[in-house]
Every structure is written in C-alpha cells, then in structure tokens.
Length: 272
Image (cartoon, rainbow, N blue to C red; front, side):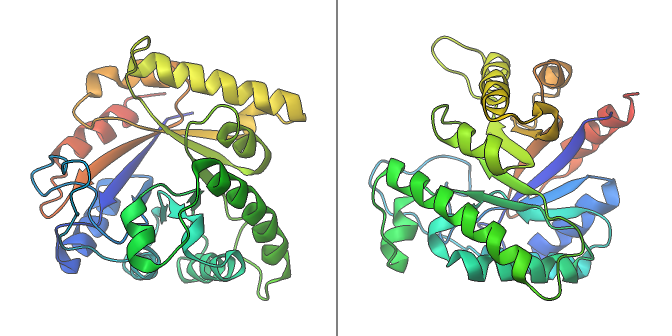
C-alpha cells in the first residue's frame, strides 16, 4: 500500500484567505490528508525561530474547529482533521457532536485527532486547568470513553466510523491509550541522544505494537502518521521502513510554500 501524504497547515501568522487557499491547493496537488492544530496562539515566530523561555507568544492565529468546518466546504476529497485537538479545551460530549457535524459537512472525511494538551499559555489565557502531564493524560483517557459513548448516541450517526488519531509519544500511558482507542497514531521523527529520528519512529512503533499485543489488538489496525522536516525527502523510504504509513509535512504561514509538497507527492506516486 502506498504511504499517505498529509499536509499540516500551521494556522498562524496568516490571513484566513491564505490558509483557505493553501488548503484548496493541497487537495489539488493530490495530498491525502489536511491537518491544522488546536491552539490559540502561535507556537513559534513567523521566521520559524522559537520564543525565549517564558516569553509571551503573539501573532495572527485562528481557531481550529471553525476552520475545519470551512475546509469541509471548500474541499471535496481530501481528509481533514486537527493535529491534534486538545482534550482540555472542550467538553467531550460537545467535541463529539462537533466532530460528527464536520464529518457530515465533509461527507465523511473527518479524522478526529486528539491529545492531552501541553501549551500552557493556551490554558492560562482561556481559563482552563493546566494540572500535571499525567493528570491531563488521565483526563484524555476518561474523555475517550465518553466520546465513544456519545458518538453511539448521536442522531444522525456519522457518515462513517470516524477514525480516531491520538498524538503523543509517551510509552507508558499515551501509547497504551493509543492501542486501546486509536485508529491512527501520530508521532515525530525526533532525534534523541541515543537515536536518530528514524530509529525513534521504529522504537515507538515497536512499543505501540507491544501494547496492542498486550490488550489483544492487531497492531496493523492502527495507522502510523509521522511528522518530519519536509526538506528531508531523502529519508522518505527509511521512514516507511520504520513503520510510517502516513508522512506529515509541516507548513508555516503566511506563504505556505507547496513546492516541496509536490516532490513528496511525486515520491508517493512512484511507489507500488
């Protein structure tokens, strides 16, 4: 099976028409999936550099789920979703209804990405309890159970079984939750002191496979969506060998340069 190419539009430092145009172009180029993220402030500066620790982050930014509703209308074939929505920001029952609604608007194209949350400025500015990382993970696990229950109660039902994508690489909790609830796992090809980015992907995939076996689930039921520097197309084949079934390419605004995305799509199309 050919790997999928996902375009990850960072909804920061851009006017909305620039974001919308990039979404339409991603579909026209033949990308398989289109993601945004669920934050209220930019994660890094317009030139791609990071803010200093403790520095307040500012800049143009738009909300995740209302944007997805727009994408559902202006595209026709490409799957869409958040990478990932923060569990802490919305009641899980409401979030489920929002997801079902966008699934209908898009005629069955939503990927329901969700994670435990981490960006403290979002929490502080919007009045959400930040707590600890383990508390947020426990809340995510509780919410996933509630999401499953509410989804079964909604009328009308979704157009399809909406795939759940869980983002995060924690081996003791996040990947266990992923094995239990997710249809797709999202991680990053991140270098560490003892592993290259490709080795990290292979290792995390192995941990997820082991969790699946422990709970009696077939690991092949869970897709593996991996984020990588879009310039590292030289690592594409190695990434697939490490277990990636979907490669996620980050694009920052306001320009959303799609030229390298074209190269990745050509690489995908060269595969059997």
